[in-house]
Image (cartoon, rainbow, N blue to C red; front, side, top):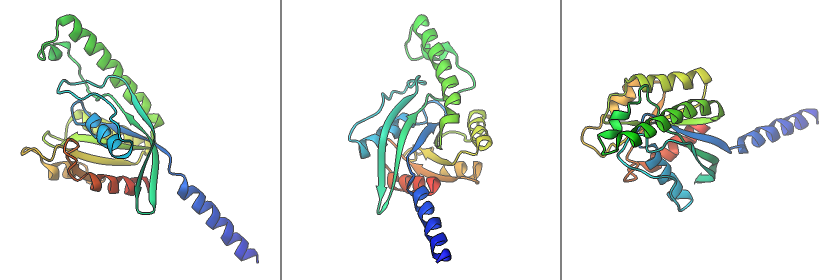
Length: 210
């Protein structure tokens, strides 16, 4: 009887923690890697609505954006999470870069100030994350200081990570280079813009969340 009772208790708590799937899921990465585009795709797939504005100007997302109670399903499995779209992380923000997109000096300086605050907020929010999806532009060198800094911060915090090599629809995309840069992580190649391999992304998310 004692053995049966102990087995019941172990099974009960095992199932209890297995069902606890509501997490804070953060999207991190450098500017213009496609974080908000991916956030919009996730929200459109599971909520029927978008999340944020997307442009080709760096640091379009300058504040933390959150969508609550998203549930994704695969067969009998499901994950419930709050999706946190963070401003792009950069080691240097120069207001003159924004002027190249037609902004006045005044607006460019304001944008740079907001972007700097956004980077600081993104780093602060790392301590609140249960799982992080690092979104990288597959057409760019993955061995950048920003990418290594992001991954290093996640490793130090022992946060589960899924790496997304975005923009695989572009000819310059080098999926294998991203995989070689971070062999210790599961890497999924997608096009958030066109939904390419998005099912593979969701399956990767289930693997990371466990």
